[in-house]
Image 1 (cartoon, rainbow, N blue to C red):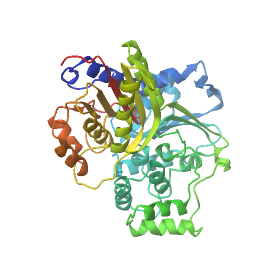
Image 2 (cartoon, rainbow, N blue to C red):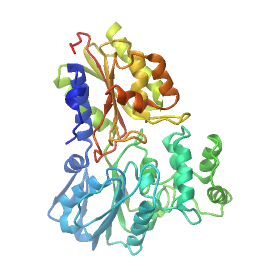
Image 3 (cartoon, rainbow, N blue to C red):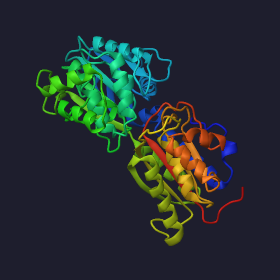
Image 4 (cartoon, rainbow, N blue to C red):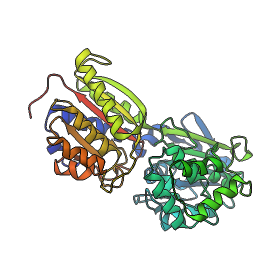
Length: 448
């Protein structure tokens, strides 16, 4: 399913081949077609999601709504299971999909656009007359925070775009960014569930959030929200964001109690809401681990929850490989050391790149001529603002450390890596479960 461009050229040694195979297996395991096949079924009139069952005879309508980078794939997989049992639907995603019963709207990521706004408004219109005999299947996948854009009253799309861009470049954690997004939206922070009430709402979730916090994934359209207007305002202050006047006015009005808070867990709107996490970062890591074992490597999953600055996290990952070679801890070599999560980049320069490219370049600086190979990719196929998934590096990627450090200082990892034929291109993968990092430590090495 996942095809890495120029894989033959990238696979210079058996260690490179293993890294690429692990990446492909990890991404494929989290693909919506596979995930829905493993988790969702229809037997007669009984619709099953994981361990929950729904008798379709209890519903007059079945609606599919939501969005995210994997939204199109989840929708087509649901159509394959339910067919004409689906009454209607609207899903906003980044890449077009051929569907029969659900309208797919193509929006923009990571900064929202008018198409995403229109798609979200259509979803809200569709939910207007939802009642107790309506089953709403909420497609909740990473990226919907931007794609499923429905600015709250008084907030223009331009103001939302400006605020989103500043947040993304600030180095703020995803939960902090989403706390602001939720309080500037008409659908996030449980407000899609509120719009659908009293319907039965079932969230089908592909998580791109460390720890699978349902209130953070896609900014939690079908989940309770514990964040507040005061916390959202504090995020802007913490990162020195000069937000548009309309944004500050809304957040300040919320702090003053003039605008209703997003719904909490005890809100009656959640009495008929259930969310199912169908895949997450560990799904990809587990599949990558299986491939590495099949190839004769010992394996170690450091964590699916790595966060912080990408270039600093890279040093720690490489250090684990060094320890394995020196002491056999935490795993004897030859070994594959895996990690996932969502690292961030604090933008200080005006270059091109993304967290995984910075991770890879920072790692390459540490590899110092060793035979170790590291692959770092975003499972959605697009790292930061560049149409590459990430990079594959080794001990020979950096022959000019000063230039590599200058590239990192200017957040310009992409040109440096591309010039050295180290970028990994997959195109849009149709899924999104955070980042995947594969460190192949082969103490016997292999000839180029």
